[in-house]
Amino acid sequence: MHGGRMLFANIHRYDLKDLPHWMEKQVYLNMGALLLGAAALGIDACPMEGVDVKALDEEFGLREKGFTALAVVSLGYRKDSDFNAKLPKSRFSEETVITQL
Image (cartoon, rainbow, N blue to C red; front, side, top):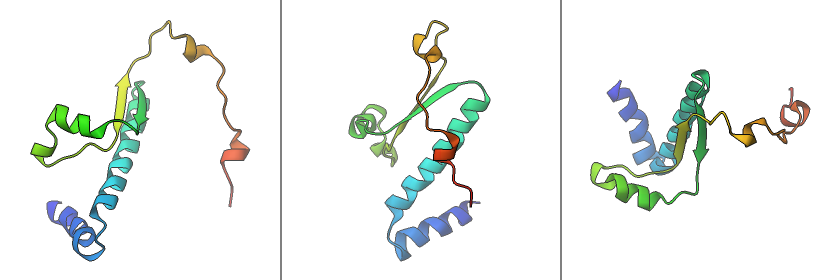
């Protein structure tokens, strides 16, 4: 498994020279799996970008460990008294969002 992962990483590192961009895509794929898993377990989750990743790197000592923050996913349970959960939501219709080919 490790050799297979390194094969793909090295293609992006040495041949395509887009390793940081490719790694970001891998993180987002895994975030999607995390969000689906949380939903399946009844756990509320919210992915977030635009966070201060430098502050996260410093707070958790990520750079010293060879990592850097990219995004955040908050996980938890809403309060039963969460007034917003019961409010009507503004969503596009399925017809607007989904295109059948």
